[in-house]
Each structure stands twice: as C-alpha cells, then as structure tokens.
Length: 355
Image 1 (cartoon, rainbow, N blue to C red):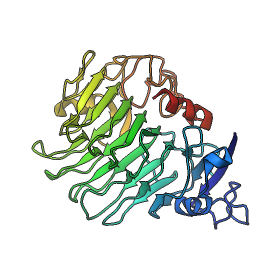
Image 2: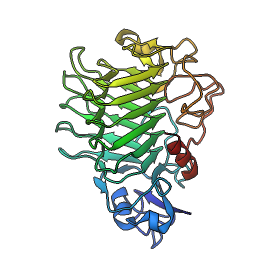
Image 3: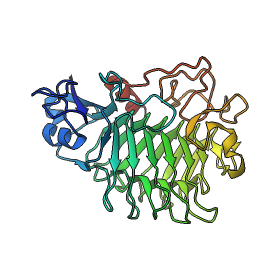
Image 4: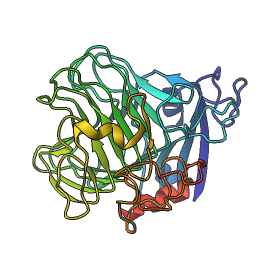
C-alpha cells in the first residue's frame, strides 16, 4: 500500500499538487475544490491512501467530495500542513486565525464541504461558517455513505463569527449509515444573539457520534434559545468523555448519551461531572471574551478533572502532551510549549480502527 501526498496552498497559481510550490506545473493546488476534482480515483484498486496537506489563507470555494472509491485502509485524510514554507498551514494557537489555512463557507444555502464518500478524515483543519443569511446551513455535511461508514475529525477548529443571522449549524450528519468520531476539536460557535436553533453538531436519524476532549464554547443566544452543542432526534447514541461545553443551551439534546468526566451545564455523566454555568464561564479559559481557549490556571475545573485510557487522546490539538487528565482540546501548558499536533496518515488510520 502506498501513501499519496498532495498539497493545497491558496497562494498558489495552481499546478498538479505534487509540491508545496506556488507556481509552475508541480505547484500546489490553489483550492480544496481544485484538488478534489483532479484527484478522484479508486483508492481501493490503486491500493493507496491519500493525504492532502493544506496551507495559505481563506479557501472560499464550496465543494463536494464524491467520485472516489475508498475503504477502511484506503482513506482520504485532509490535513493542515505543519511544514508549509510560509508557516500558514496548521494553526497551533489557542483560537481560530485567518493567518492559517481556513476553509470558509459564505453562501446563503448548501454547505462549505459536502462529504459524500466513506472514510474521509480531517486533521488540523480550520473550518469557518461566515454566512450572513440563510438557515440550517453547515460548514461541513457528511452525506451519502455506505453501511457502517466512519469518519474522524481531529485537531480541527470550527467556528462561526457572525453573531446576527438566523439558525446555523457547524457539522451536520444527514445519512443514517454515517458515524463520526471527534477528537480534540474546538467548536467556537459565537452566533446566537437571538433565540434561534443554533447547534454545533446536528445528527439525523440513526447516526451515532463519539466525542473525546472537544471544546464547545460561546453560542451566546438568550437563555430561552436553542444554542446547543449536539442535537439529535432521539435515535442517536452519543459517547462523550473529557469534553467541555460552555453555551447558553443544552450540552447534548435528544440523544441517548453515555458520558463521563465532562464539564458543562448538564449532568448526564455517569461519573466525574464538572459544573460550568453561564455565570462562571469566564473562569475556566484564559480569555473567554477574545477566544483564547487554553486552560486558565490550575483552579479551572478543566484542569486534571478528566480521565485517561481507552480512546482518550494523549496529546492535545497543538501536540502538547496531556501530563494531567485535562478536559477539552488543549492540555494545561505546564512548560508553555506547543507542538506540531499533526497526525500522520498511519496514526490517523490507527485512531479510526480503534472506533
């Protein structure tokens, strides 16, 4: 089995994606949509797995991943590039930033990325929903899938900076055969100054989701609103450990949840729950107002109140080792250092096989 690597850089004039260059026939693709259209193949027959490393700034072209043949060992991995020549690939800071590659959705309908193939994974990518009008439109939707299809999102930053428009969601799973595992992601859902039905993750009938060390923050709708983190329809199973939720709405709604060692408003945990009410959200992170989501200090309920083992990650979104059992996508930075955080394709495969 061979690893195929391609590159995307929004500063590139466009090439065949085989190098990180900005010009010439071998230059990086200029957008994710250009990469997808050119590289569609049968990875199973090719006996390959495919990694694409992304760098640059805003990539605002909507796209659908379709026309591939994938398998459990023949997957697609879309990653932030920690080796990008201009240092604008994977964002290893504690909040979203347009200084690094960011897949943005601005249209009034649809989604930024529609994933209509099985075994498509994301690692270290920034995704942003910047809609100024519309309703129920996600930055990423996981659609048509085969039975038992699994995708993994790891180390991603997903946000919605617009605080005025109607109902929005970040991730939408709309195929009942699709399951999703999220590990060490930041979901910064700023929108919600009204009472609209805002949700970071929305689940259709029959799909399930696993959540480990994710951080769900803001979604600052009125207390009577539906600014919720994970929303199902009653048929879904949510497995959750070491996640923190700080929104005005529910942590997890309308789903069967098996959970422990989470921090939020709801106590759905079998053990280890840490309380975060609206009034004390600012006490847990370094700067709740400006969006620095590192753990504030050792008095934060996120510090060393989680669990370890099983599917819990041992390094955080930035590659810093969890030296204590911290809750959320950022470990308490004992030495102040930040690592690369990027998983290789082989490591991502092992994460997937664990699910």
